[in-house]
Image 1: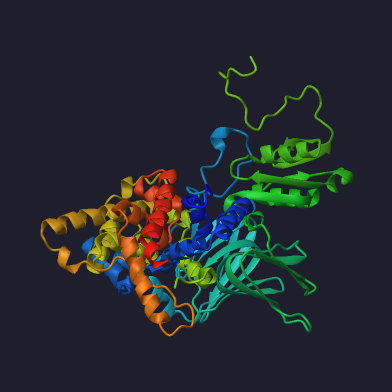
Image 2: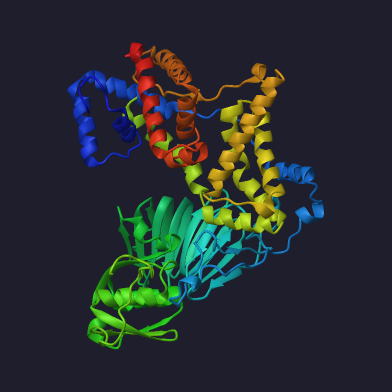
Length: 376
Length: 207
């Protein structure tokens, strides 16, 4: 604060938005303590900040609005109501294993894969509401991604599911939505109190209370992991274990559910590290090399060998932007962090201790252009 | 008379949920790609996702529910008619908000030229200050204070008020507002601060 008479409004608006650093917070508190009038000033502005509301407008009937729009555009009812599944466009989330820049994938946004089916996991439509109503019991529909690919599913209610690589997922609707995951998926769910949304992973059941959260349970994992970004998720084991109580997780909380049935809850986690799926990044924090290479192999659809068991026991802390780096870049990066080197043969990479032989050309993650002035 | 800091927490969380939950640009882009292939279901899906939000946003400009709904539908018409040559450099949501605001401004100009709009202008926003204290006249005092807050917001300059309402009524981030209005982030932040300062000055007699 500049002085007791002139508030720093930029700082106060950050304070109202809850975006102050602790140092800034202290400055505001000092200003508030300097004069009772300051508290009154802030409370008044806060009243405007939080008390202003939108006018309540009539609810729109989206189905009717879509119908009207199609009529206006002379789109025939037949075409508007067609129920064929849209084309599967899955070029997309594949990470390259070549170093050639021209072969690198386009940005994540352009590569957003879109899955849908005629049975309610739909790109649709004004038809969506009708569809849900008319399909109270559906057989489970199954989706899967191979290693090296991801995909997005959009449900008829607007919820979306981002599937990680090497993931199988089945969805059934029966008064609510039941999803079973083997692998990793990031959910953004539009909560409807009368239509429960439940996710099963291993022995874990996550009942969604309107939220963005990730679930992970690959076949090799000994525990399922649920991380909540927004909203709340109730987690329990399946079947229920004696003496093990379910937990309700809120934002920035993680639950690890061991196959033994133990549920551990960690509050105040950095969710970005666990939702890397959505950010095109793999984040490792003191992660064993064996686990790192499993993740990289899954993300890039490659095979990584580390014959040196001593090397395999090391840990790595790193972030790998999987869609911007080729597999060779990523493996070389991890190898360098281990003071090791990698040798590639097709899809197979071998990481060995020590630096490469002297005749090998050094690699650069960001090679300088030919006409660069640097290094001359 | 003004509420305590704690009273607002719950309201604030509610306020921002909608914009955050549906902000999935990757999915929007997939719909736009399908739209380019004349897939009517992608158009319907975009209507499903954005119609109400665009209508609500347009209402801030036109202050007439029917006209706001018309502005939103015009955006979808334009989207379909230009589907094979759409280039959306930033986020799809920002593009749609920008488009509906432009359309809303056009409609306002047209309606005003016809002399049809003035009589049906609705309130742009409402103010709900929850009661505080246990005094018998607390409700009355709150009502009076709410009216003062409403007047304070109305007294802001049009641009500062628009930025303030986009931020506080539509729950848009500073970055989103900058994108939609074509302003720098620094300008948006400065106008939000300006709104706070002007509101405080207006409310000084109530302290």
